[in-house]
Amino acid sequence: MSGNIQAYQRQADQQRRDELIVSHLPLVKHVIGRLIGDTPPGVDVENLESAGVLGLVEAASKFDPTRNAQFKTFAYLRIRGAIVDEMRRNSPLPQHVHTRLAAVRRACRTLPHPITVEAIAAATGMTEDEVTDTLAAERVAKTTSWEQTADANGMEPAVAAEEPSVEMERWETIQQLTDAIEGLDSKERIAVTLYYREDLRLKEIAEVMKLSVSRVSRLLSKATFELGERLKALKAGAVVAG
Image 1 (spheres, rainbow, N blue to C red):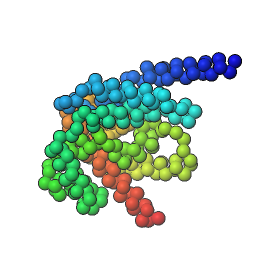
Image 2: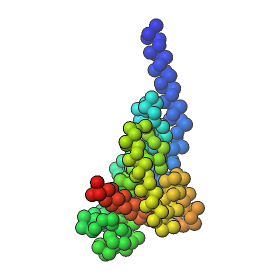
Image 3: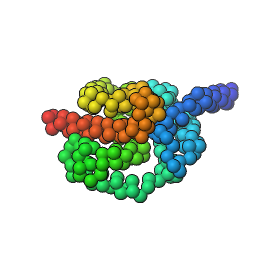
């Protein structure tokens, strides 16, 4: 009798996983559209989609609905990670981008915080567009600290319930982030809002703002970098004050 129950449970679990995978397949293309606008040369979108589907399958296999989590967020992170890993393996950054990244990182080690794109451009001799393009290349390969904070704070659905003290800290961070976003210029603020709050893809944002995809990518790269810097400065100030 117990064997029949176990077999039934396995079958039910498999059916649940299959349903999660099928119903969330569109999420794979959505994630790709948020990572890249126009497909860069040498990037095989089919490979990225295959990697994303594997990430989705892994998420469905590991998802535990009893942990008060939303599957979409759980799957989003794993799909994104699988796609980024595929991009790293098959579409390595060109040498000139690595050179620029090294220059930007050197500047960031010496410049006073909060660092701005304008300050990096002045320190490296690069144009502001070159700096933002370099940050965009890094943004695809690595989620910035403030974006991780945002994912956990409601700009993406919350993954799980936390202790009250943690929740309070998160709400404080949300308020700091909201204030920092208000300090952006109007185009950057619109791009960030459409990307993180409205969950639009780069091409969709470009259509709404009547800009090129590359311009939207630059706006987001500049905004996300400088938001991260402002949040670091706020947190550092809070620690000193405490």
